Structure formats: C-alpha cells, structure tokens
Amino acid sequence: MLDIAIDQSWSAFFEIEKEQTYFNKITSEVELAYEQSVCFPPKGQIFNAFKYCSLSNLKVVIIGQDPYHGAGEAHGLAFSVPEGVAIPPSLRNIFIEIQNSQNTVFFPNSGNLERWAKQGVLLLNATLTVKQNEPNSHKNIPWQTFTNHVIQYISKEKDGIVFLLWGGFAQKKKTLIDVQKHFILESGHPSPLSANRGFWFGNNHFNKTNQILKNQGKIGIEW
Image (cartoon, rainbow, N blue to C red; front, side, top):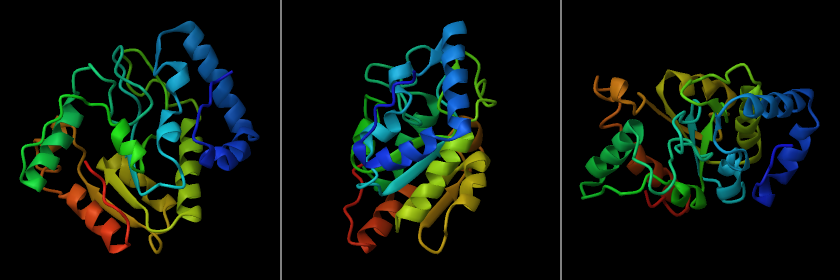
C-alpha cells in the first residue's frame, strides 16, 4: 500500500478521496509501476507536499507538472530537490528571479524547498510520480484527478490563497480556482526554454505574493 504520511490537517480531504474508485486505481497502478521499473520519488515521499505544508497554514500554491526524473532528484515537492543534489535549471532560474526582484545577493547552495513548504507554500505537482529518465511517463495514472480535487478543495475551503501559475500547463488549472476568493499570478515557466525567451524573468511574483499576503494581515514568505 502507498505510504500516505501527511499533516493531519489534510486528513478529512484524504479520507474522502481514498474512498473514490479513481484513487484505488492510482494505488494499484503506482504499486505496479514501482515493482516493474525504477520510479520517483521514493514511495514514502510521494505525498511530501501534504506532509510539510499544512492546510491550516496554507498561503501559497505553486503548481508543477511532474517530478524530476533523474536519480535522487524528486522528493515529493514541486521544483525542489533534496540536500546535496545539484540545483536543476528551473529552480536556478527561480532563485535568480528572487535575487533580482529583491535586489540582494541571494543564491542558496541547497535546492531543498522544505523551508517554503513549512511556511505555507504547497509545492504541488499535477502528477506525483514518474519513471526514471522518462518525463511525464505516469500521465495516464489518474493523478490529475486527485490533484485537481486538491485545487478545488483548497479553493472551496480556504480564502485569500495566492496561486502561482507558471507556464501553459499550470495556467490550465485556473478554471478550478474561485477567482473571487483567491489571487492568481501568471507568467511563463522558469525552465530555460521559457525564461530565455523573456517569459519568466521580471515577473516579480515573489514580491507580489508577499504584498498580497501582508495586505491580508498574513506573514510573508521568506523565499
């Protein structure tokens, strides 16, 4: 069985979803995939986004597509890598944008974003597993049904959440969000292909997010 280690504030949501037919399909297909080939993240880390970011403290949602597919890179948080792993190009561009927008010397030597998650940033990949060296290889496992339900649940249960939608894939999730209750910031994707064409740098999303949070009387994120 999948190890669903999550913060207890998500328990009510998971109890509903685990009763659904599609979730049983996820469980069986993921188990089979991990038996037949090398897949990431490790099974015990698949739901890390919900372990490190509590629903009660949720402030920001960042949506990725699927996990990194190289050995040792994925650990259940979108865009993040564990301590000691080289910072991937997209995350490098995220750090550069933070540095540029805050006009400061900022370049962490770690790409582990658990510190963001613990401050209330849900780092949610739309698909939570992947086969080694095959990006988007688990797109047919009904993960997106699950993660779409996550987005809809947040939209319904919470108020004033900042959704950061980077790139066309993430922006398609906009239809799941109640724009009357929440804030949406959109830009190109931080991947080199998009960033180098001028669609990422200068979006100022990190400053804008903190200003939105502070306007609501919330504490901003220490990026």
